[in-house]
Length: 206
Ligand code: GLN
Image (cartoon, rainbow, N blue to C red; front, side, top):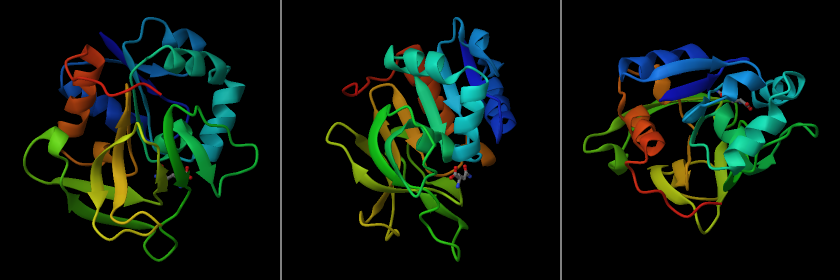
């Protein structure tokens, strides 16, 4: 079972290292042929506008969209969450998304003062005990579609939804607005690996 990590820009290596430490075979995804035979794929943090452009120029956008529409399990973190969302606020006009999860997210929605922060969150799907969450110029989830399951919230929060959803799942799509790959805690990646293996019951597909 091979899990791809999109490796065009941004934080691919930490995801790869974490998944490898869980015993998964990891392949960097840089072009369409790298998608062949994947059991799952990770879209890392970075800059969603740049990633959108690079996905196009690498010829990856259309085949990846097709794979996601066909049910390829995907984990999107921060910019990856933006790329998977149905609607993006404060994006660039030419920024494209896969619309794989029924969310509206606002880019850089935490504002400049608290653009980056860390906190402990409950993530019951990953087991007992808080998970340490690192937010870096994170998007804010402003709308959650009826078929989306909210897995973790930020007490208080910034946007119109309070508490603010920061980890969500719909079908085989798992997203976080924080960076689970930047801590030693592997539980979120274990949840994703279970989704890839089909061990974790999935919710309604988009
Ligand atoms: N602000 C970035 C964007 O809009 C996301 C930041 C991140 O991935 N850490 O894409």
